[in-house]
Image 1 (tube, rainbow, N blue to C red):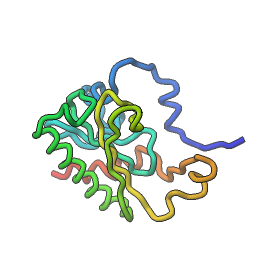
Image 2 (image 1 turned 120 degrees about the horizontal axis):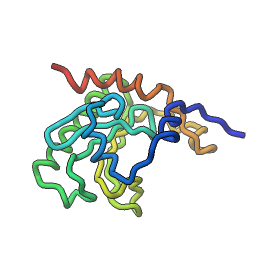
Image 3 (image 1 turned 60 degrees about the vertical axis):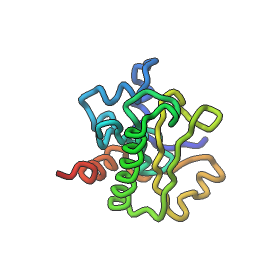
Image 4 (image 1 turned 90 degrees about the vertical axis):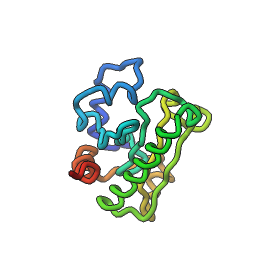
Amino acid sequence: MKQLWAPWRIEYILSKKTDECIFCEYPLKDEDRQSLILYRGRLCYVIMNKYPYNNGHLMAVPYRHVSSITGLDDETLSELMNIARLAVSCLAKAMRPEGFNTGINIGKAAGAGIDEHLHMHIVPRWTGDSSFMAVLDEVRVIPEHLLATYDKLHPLFNKK
């Protein structure tokens, strides 16, 4: 039997499920740390992925509920890219990755887990982070608790 310790998953397992869009719902709450929202812009925000591909996996998300970049106006699209750049900068300072994967999956066929609300993934990468665990066992090892990563990144996003 394979076991992987992921203490943050119990919150999701026990939580009340909703049909509402989490990318619309979370920004309405006044609990950014609990919702994992690191930064709020005027038209877009940055949120941590609760089920990350890698430690520090973030998402840049427009507040507007659209499923494709074709549904965004130029100002929102520009801010989306600017906060993605901010996310890369903050991750570089806090975690010193050797590279990044960034991208937008548009539609289920393209791999979008939540295809009704556009979001851009920003994933820090290190040489060797695709270890034998991921290759042979389809298991990812996230070495730091999500809230510890949040506490490390939040001050970088919100410098006064």
